[in-house]
Amino acid sequence: MSEDIWAEYRDLLADLLGTDDLAPLLDRAAPVAIDNGQVLLKDSEPTDSMYLVLSGRLEVHIELDTHTIRLGEIEAGNWVGEVAYYTHCDTACSTVMALEMSTLLRLPFEAYTDLVRSQAEVACRLTHLLIAMQVQRLRATVNDPVLDPEGRLLMLGDLSIPIDQQPLHHGGVLDFIRKLTGIR
Amino acid sequence: MLLKKYLSTLPGFAFMTEEDLDHIASAMDVEEYPEGHVFLYQDKPARAFHLLLEGAVKVGYYGRLNRYHAVRMLKPGEFFGGLSLVDSKPVMANYAADGDVKVASLPLSAFLLLYQPNSALGCHFQHVIASHLAWDLKARHLALRDLLGKLYPAG
Image (cartoon, rainbow over all chains, first blue to last red; front, side, top):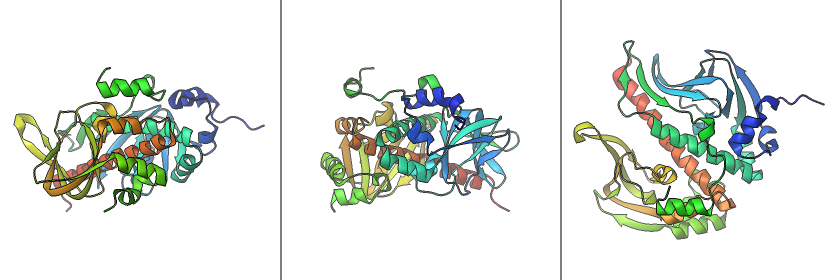
């Protein structure tokens, strides 16, 4: 019997997706380990996958030549690389680099499309998570870039959603009514 | 122009069935608006999810001392208002018609019904929203790269 390569992260994954039925996702994914300082995605260079951070910490930059804007950090439980998938672009729109040794779940774009087509419920849970993260990122970054002494632009934003604040379940009719009426 | 057919050409709708498209198209109101019409006001909640069909919509931000900053120009096929509807927080910028425009709008109540992930249609609609937000993120990244280019011109 082969070793369960995901054993260490099953609880995290079950929490994130709100289900113990992880096979549809894990069957299509592969673990990736990267060292401190290693670049996972390079701005404007080809990419074909999105990644879930299982452990460790990553930093996100926009790059042009040798200049960068630091957008923020990504912690465990958060995805990176999904923008290229949803915009049908085969190049990364930012640079993502490990700030410490990190472990990631790699989900190729083709595998995600297959998941959406064949395992709608799991894909929907994943999409729900990705929307929450995109919302966080759109809201997080500030409007006035700050220039540091070395000429690097800083836009310090917390791009991660803490695991305990991630959407663990889907809203039902009550959530719908609360939202419609503005009741929190 | 048949709205259903137009929706089917948009990337985010790739997984929609004919029936899904019927539901969404029938829930949207298509109207023409004059130059300057404001669809979304900065710091106010969105009341509808909009799709620009014809013309252009300018996105602007009122910063310190009420100074106006042009952010970007939306083209036909682009959605706007989704972020505020998803997180129930105010819109971050002003969205106004730049010339005459035609816009299809999905009212808040219909948006919230569609956004429920308990059905195949809801799941497909979430894919549309994820796609819309991803385009917004990408637009922001492109704008930041342009900013770098202006601050540090090559050569």
